[in-house]
Amino acid sequence: MIYDAQEARKIDEWAKTSGLPLEVLMERAGSEVAKRIKDRHSVNDRIIILCGTGNNGGDGYVIGRELVRDGFDVTLHAPFGDAKSETARLHQRYAEAFGLVSETMCGQYDVIVDALFGTGVDISRLDAVVEVFDWVKEQQRQRAKLYAVDVPSGVPSDHTVDFKGQALQADMTFLLHAYKRTAFLIKTAPFFGELEKIDLGLPALGEWEVLSESISPLLARDPYGHKGTYGTALLIGGSETMPGSIQLAARAALRTGIGKLQVSTVSTAQVGLMINAPEAMLLNQTTETITGVLQQVSVAGIGPGVTSESISDWIALLLEQDIPVVLDAGALILQEYPERKAAIVVTPHIGEFARMTGRTIPEIQDDLFGQASEYASLHQVIVVLKAHIILVATPDGGGYVVNGASSGLAKGGSGDTLFGVVTSLLGQTDHYKHLSVERLIALGVFWYAKASKQAERHVHPSSLLATDVIDELGRIHDQ
Image (cartoon, rainbow, N blue to C red):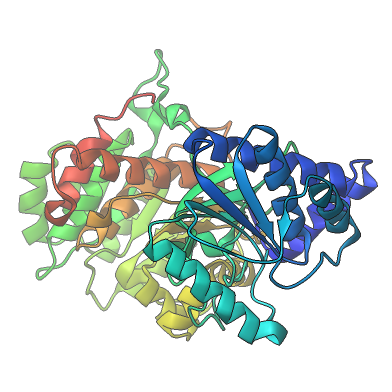
């Protein structure tokens, strides 16, 4: 799960009211972090743990005590004074009983544990903070490893609107129970270093989920099924100047299991489809032909490469039908969306989303989760937002994050491919009745991201093409 600061406070409150004292939760968190440090270092390494005045500092005191008990050379230092919370003070006293707390930071260390600030810098102590940060950075220049507890100090937890880069750069961040939103935002993600989430045995109460599961639910086929079992999709796209986009979408749709595919496009693109996607049925790109097939399809997607002045009419026509509709690229033109039972999915990249919302790209990047959620909730649509990560924001205010796709996707044609994947899977909802529409889309995005990463086995990210990803969609098995 991904928590914002408010959700993190809620889980602490849940623990307290459920009979799990915070000091026990802190003990569990610190012990788990200590185990991971033990796995990575020897007793010969010199370790300093910097403890703040809040609960993050309390975790640090536990970490130090656990390491010392196993023979590690540990110094605990509280540069801003004693712990202020009752729970952290309790663990500080335990650490002092072990003789671990030092008033100075002397010499060179091999390992620094950052347990200073859980959610950002205390600007009332800014001068002292800068001094500590400078000392840590000098230690890092001497090759000290820096491990952050939950959030690197100086990094906010929810958004980066006011973030100016004044933070510690961790080699690894141990995330307690859940991810923080800023671990995925473009300004702050590099400060986290490698991510390792530590399960503390608490319930999952967050609204956003990091998707990292197997795609096996999408690969199961009915041994008694036929092409009708897996739905019929209608794709509308392409133009004389952009004939390739709809071909990429069509190939991706076929690779992700759609039973029958109808493609409404211009004659130039039809020639390419005859060669590259002979499994597709071809239609002229006219209102008459589109109207003629709507009763036969289980999903419709429109937008890639379309330049026709009739696109508004086609969108309205599709939205009158009781089928899921996917809007991409040239079809992302609506200010309002009709109320309907079947899903509406919009698949913008960040530049298109800026145009749709009237916000700037930096404003969206600073609050990616909030912006996507706001649009999805306001318009009651599913937003597949393509940034350096991919978000699937749901109308209820939550959603899914897909991270770790190939950097090679930053290239023309990638969005057309994802559009084809999403449309294809929505056409198969009768087959995937055990999955919600939102989760089905998220798993499709995960499949796409996984295929892009798998393609790097054969092609360098700089050379990766959308066609490489499409080919890998068909090579993924239950992993």
